[in-house]
Image (cartoon, rainbow, N blue to C red; front, side):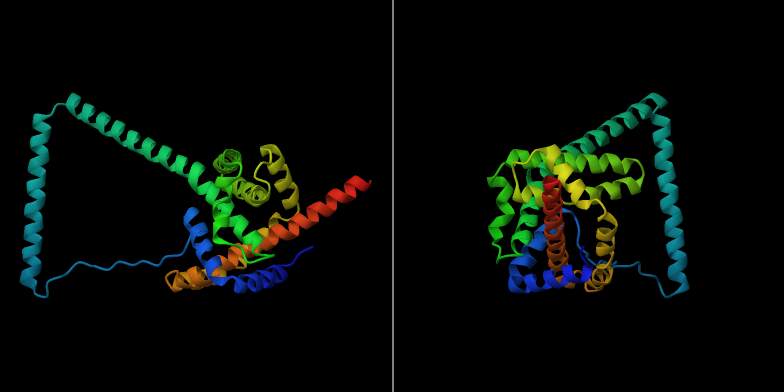
Length: 267
């Protein structure tokens, strides 16, 4: 069994020994998943007149603007018949869908061929950092070893999570925890078969999904503090802390899985 306290203690110890590299790799990892906590606020507002005359003038000007706009649209209605309007709407809809499709395809390609392999490399960095001072170059690991296999496995992981999420949100969350160990498995065995990677992750997370969920919830206080400091605390401490704790969880579950395998072989 494992406890949150033990994982976090180990994570803090290892992170402190390789602090700046952990910070840098965690920034990469957070950017890959669109995470982070960046505070923002409106910097500008409307200005109001202090005198009643200014207020009335503004209202009068607003009425004139509305009347001008109405005249313009009236002219358009007179000059455009219904067929032209329908054709215009159809063209705009086609353009919108084409732009959306292009953005979606480009985003998917970037995820599959760049961001997913980098994500595997980030997991490898934090896992290796548990036993040694990991090097930044680890984030490029998947590009050097069995690149296409990593792309394939990570793509199916993303696809399955997406499809399960379509069946309302809860199944997608459950499956995301079930597949959680796949990037770590690829980080150690880049040539592993897709079905084997999914099966191992499923077995490692069997009985541990809820505890892993609670582990994630235990960082809420830190993440709120990160948000309150416009992401500064997140960059400098919370993000590497979370990533290193995730690697520590994988280490424990991996040992439990190997012990279970050995017991089954002995029987």
